[in-house]
Figure 1: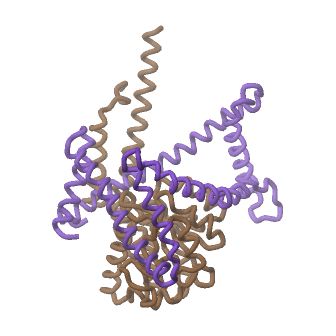
Figure 2: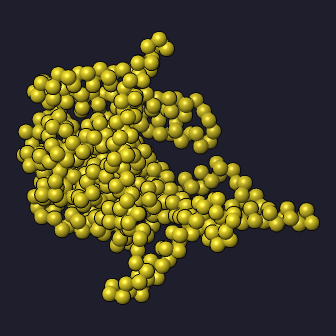
Figure 3: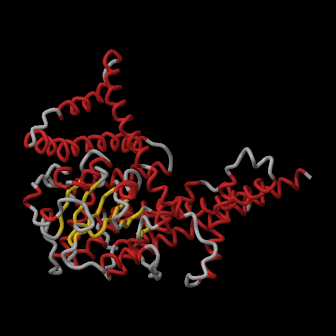
Amino acid sequence: MERFDQINPRVIYLLLAVFLVFPVLKPIGMPISIDPQLTQPVFNWIEGLKPGDIVIFDVAYGGGSDSELGPQLKAWFYHCMRKGVKVVGVAQWDTGAPLAYTAVKEVVAVLESKGISAKEGTDWAYVGYKAGGATVFRAMQDDFWKACGNTDWNQKNFSQSPLLAQVKKWDKATIKGFICYSAGSPGIPTYTTYFPDQDLYVGDVAVQVAGTSNLLRAGQVKGILAGLAGAAQYEKLVGVPGLGVKLMDAQSLGHLVVILLVVLGNVGYRLKMRAGKKRAA
Amino acid sequence: MSTTQIWVAALMTLACYSYLYKENVFFRFAEHTMIPIAVAQAVVTTYHQTLIPYKNTYIVKQGWWWMWIFFAAGVLFYTRLLPAKYSWLARYPISMQVGWTLGSYFSIAPRPYVVQMLDAIRALYNPAAKGAYLMRFENLLFFLMFATAMMYFFFTIGGKSKLVGVAGQWGRWILMVGFGASFGNTVQGRISLFLGRLSFLLTSWLKIKI
């Protein structure tokens, strides 16, 4: 028992891999509860908007966080298109910009197969990454077209997009809220600093949720999608189960394994300390 | 993604995970490939998404020819890669950027933190509020945890004052509870990352339906 705190890491990785792969291939069907303080407000925000209202999503993540934030973006975008809410996408991270565009296009294909309108340029537009950091976003607030060089992600002029023709600046009359899919910096602080009067929602990686909760409590952020669990909850709310729901069983079992190993490690440590004291006595 | 792209991505993923067994040449190859690709992608994206549109918007249409001065200053960053005879030129754009960033941060960065500091001041007694009893307990608990956690960092007074010393020890436990919550979220995040790659390997590479 004393050796529990010295388990070979490879054994731990193998154990974790087994407990993660098995429920992905054979789902258990554990229930998913909706967090009323984190996830529900994000859903209520879109649900409370009228068709034609414009919202903005910001991609502040890279490839390493696409596993968590990609499913969040897909579920949220699906919800917006189904409600008739218009979406404009921007990106603070260059590495995440193409990932988000790919994710949105996948959802567009699903929407069009169901007869829901999701036309690029009319129902949604993607501006993508513009270098310059927070300065560019501050400039977008006053003159969106100029700050982006009048060019979207596909090198098309803004004047060719009926949706972007309505978005000249980021004020409360034009934009009915932002959601920032954030994995680090730059990210949320851009909005809490330069857009404090706008409604801000966050799609957050799990690592950051503890810190972002302070912003939620202070009212700077209105709702948080917390990691892959947040994606699963949002998919359940929208009624379109996706990758988030499918991976929740594995997520839960993975946590159980980690808890078990932490307990075993501490038990082994305590027994070793006791045995050492006995020998010394 | 094309079949070739999927295979490259899958093999690179497996090469990265091979590090869990031990350091090996496949992991090194994947690591050394990813970094230059990421840099190249950033350069190409910036060129097409920012440089060209800004040149057309500001220099060509608006006639702001003096923007080329800032472009030249930006190019000077790359003189860091030149021999010492020329690399000192990079100090000009670095100093411009540091100075501008400092000025910007000092003027505007405290704003979101002030909001949180104001939120930390909470009423311990508000008889007019609904659920007044519950709010009093929650706010009281917050105040005690906040105060003791702050007292942990009073390293000079803690040794002289028993109150601050004991409160600081309580504060340490509260900080550890907070770190434990962060750790739990971190574990969730890391497991999610693996699950994302796992779903790619199973669905896109091996064509297994999940």
